[in-house]
Amino acid sequence: MTRKQKRLAVIGGGVSFIIAAVLLVMFAFSQSVAYFYMPADLAKTPVAPETRIRLGGLVGEGSVVRGTGSTVEFAVTDGSTNAVKVKYTGILPDLFREGQGVVTEGMFASGTNIFIADTVLAKHDETYMPKDVADRLKQQGLWQEGQGAEGKAQEAKVTQ
Image (cartoon, rainbow, N blue to C red; front, side, top):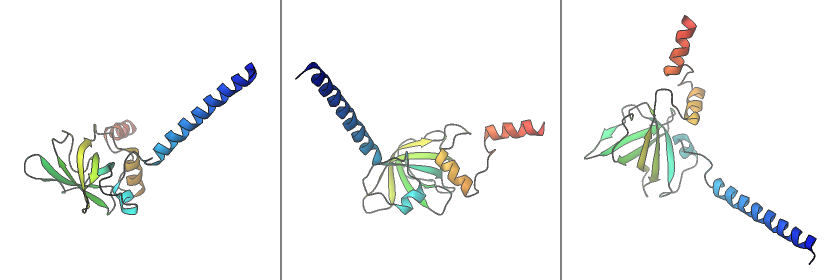
């Protein structure tokens, strides 16, 4: 082989390696593109039991039931008629409460529609709302621009 042929072989091998790596990454991401599922998503396309997912939405009003020890049951909703019952054992974040944004991690128990969460992430301040949740609530007319501290500050500027 000449020098030119060796150089082309090395470049060709490098390019084929990069293409293979990109294809593997794309295949891995195609399995779950969504950062988290919402109850409406799960109603359309159910997830197989014991598949680890993230479930996001709002904690349903009047749905929090404290059990024995540190077990808590609550419903996650996205403002529609769809709600997912969640069971969590552990210490809840301080900002966890009804009507607030939440993302849970876990899996559905086999043979039931109960989501067994091992991690609960609560809204971290009064202006936080996951973008997907906010967009869906806006579409349904349940959430308006100007809610939260940032919106109230803008309203105060307008009235002055």
